[in-house]
Length: 391
Ligand SMILES: Cc1cc2nc3c(=O)[nH]c(=O)nc-3n(C[C@H](O)[C@H](O)[C@H](O)COP(=O)(O)OP(=O)(O)OC[C@H]3O[C@@H](n4cnc5c(N)ncnc54)[C@H](O)[C@@H]3O)c2cc1C
Image (cartoon, rainbow, N blue to C red; front, side, top):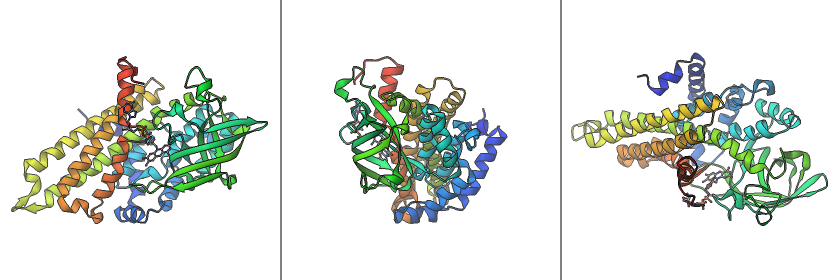
């Protein structure tokens, strides 16, 4: 049976995308990502190159100036970046945040923002959902947007909001009706487009000192005015709109994890072939070889689920279970591969020059964000397998 990689590469255009992204990534070798990580700087050169190539606008339809590709192709693009040793976390959110505008925005909003995003003239890199007092329970957000005439006045706080300083626009989730005043907790939440170029003094963005170079911030929002025309869709229906985007996000994150998993397996197996201790390559010892083979099998299995989820998504079929399972399995497989790779490298795994410790830190995120694997399991247990709800 053909491997998943071979199956999807039967499509010539997908193989061409894979090759083109590999070529682009060659200009951004390990040393580039190591330096960016060490200095905690934004990989602007890489983001510029990806934007210029058109791949960052993969999911924007052609009529709005994008490439009009499917989630399968977008996943291949991100997978190849991770597989090259890079990290698309600096800009990947643009691929899925714009989906909220595309699916639920007005024609006027789509015409105003999407072509400029596709050209790289506007950056939509930030999505402000998480709050300190709500955590995974998104319906408990307390940031409030109150309508006053033709604007909304917003007050509140957000945490772990990535790339807010590297973005022109930000999607913001806020309560327009308080939790206490709604019968259905998913109601009364709205999504806004915030133009961060005009918010001086109203939006305080404070960088967080994090384990990885992810440009993540706390936001303090005080009397921020948003024109009513920047509301996406209907007031109070925002929770539904972001849920619509979750499947795309989970499939893309799974793709990144697959890319990382393959990077770790490649590096571990090469090192195990070359490193000689006790007079033979360490990979000749089954204690070293088998864990790498096991991690490889798990990454390839997760990849099957990723392509299944992506194909269903692209056919516009229901894919909640598959998208969640892809994210779960891929993040676990990449984390297993990361551990195996670090173990295979011994002490060198901890040395920055070998890049394993950097990728090890980076790939750990996928089990936690954008959604924790516990909540993925709860979704499967409660919504798919119909067991009792815990929340
Ligand atoms: C690097 C980074 C970047 C991020 N970027 C963004 C961003 O750009 N925008 C944004 O909005 N958010 C962002 N996040 C936030 C991320 O989505 C949240 O951290 C995540 O959703 C979990 O929320 P929390 O951290 O408050 O954990 P909590 O909700 O406090 O959960 C803590 C632990 O308890 C577990 N838990 C909680 N409830 C249950 C339950 N009912 N059953 C079982 N287990 C449970 C969780 O699984 C987790 O293990 C980012 C986070 C990180 C680390």
